[in-house]
Length: 204
Ligand code: GRF
Image (cartoon, rainbow, N blue to C red):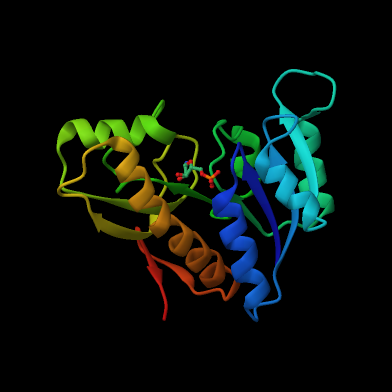
C-alpha cells in the first residue's frame, strides 16, 4: 500500500502514522508528504525519515507544484491512500473524484458537530469550549467535496468536563488523534474498512 500524507504544520499526526506503520506488519509506506507551505515542521521530520516532500499551490509560484501536476505525481507513485493529517486547504474536486473513498481526514471534534468551513485547529476547540459541551473527541472520515462531510469511519470521545481553556481541550483531543488516525490507516491497509449500505464498518 502506497500512502501520501498531506500536512500544513506541526505534523504530529503524520509522525504517529509513520511510527505505527514502521512498527506494524502491513507493508505500507508513506511515499510522499505534501504541504501547502514551502516548509514546515512536518517537512523537517519527513526529510529526517528520507521521505520526499512537495509543496502544492492553487496559483503558480516558485517552489510549488500545481494541483493538476500533483494528481499526475500521485498516479505515478501509485498512491492507494491519501491521509489528510492537519491539512488546511480544500482538496480539489478532481482529486476527490480520482480517489473516491481513498482519502481520509482527521478532524479534532466529534462530527457532525463542530465541522465545516473555517472549523479547523483552535477554532474547533474554541467552539467546543464556548458551547460548554462536556465531551469532545476525534473523528476520521472519508473526504468528499464538502468540508468535514464524508462518511465517518471511526471516532473516539474524551471527557472534557472541568476543562478551563480551549487549549486544554486541544491537548486531550490530540492524544486521541494520535491513536485514532494510525488505527484507521492500519485498518485501511488491511482492507478492513467496508461500506454496509450508507454506513462504514471497520472489521476487527
Ligand atoms: C490536529 O488537531 C488535526 O486534527 C487538525 O489540525 C491539527 C494538526 O496537528 N486538523 P498536527 O499537524 O498533526 O500536529
